Length: 120
Image (cartoon, rainbow, N blue to C red; front, side, top):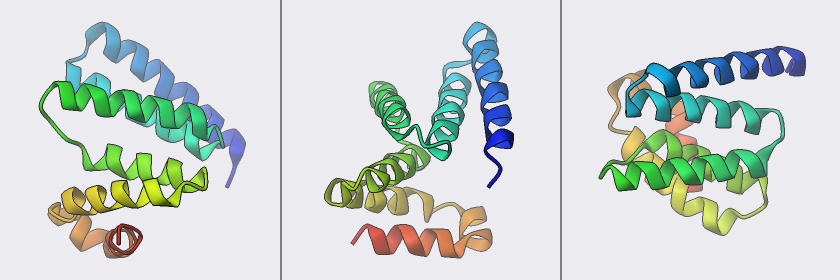
C-alpha cells in the first residue's frame, strides 16, 4: 500500500475530527476518532491506535452503547501486537455485532467469516 497516501488520508481524518469536536454530535465525534485510530493502525502506530480504540470503547460503554467496529479494531490491534488470546474476545464481539449488518453480510462475507474464525 502507499504509505504517503495513507499519511495524507490521516491528515484529513484529523482535520475532520477537529471539525467534529467543534461542531459535531457525540456519535459523529466518536466516528471521527475511530477513523483517526484506524489510520494510525494502518500506518503501523498500533499502540497509539489501540489506546484510542480503548478510549472509544469506554465512551461507548459510558453512553450505554456498543460498536462492532470498535471491537473489530481492538481485535486487529491486539492481533498486530501478538496478543491473540485477548484479540479473540474482541473478534467474537465484532462478529456478534457486525454479522447483524445486512450490508456487510451481503458485501463483505469474507470479512465476517474471518471475524468469526478468529473469535473462536
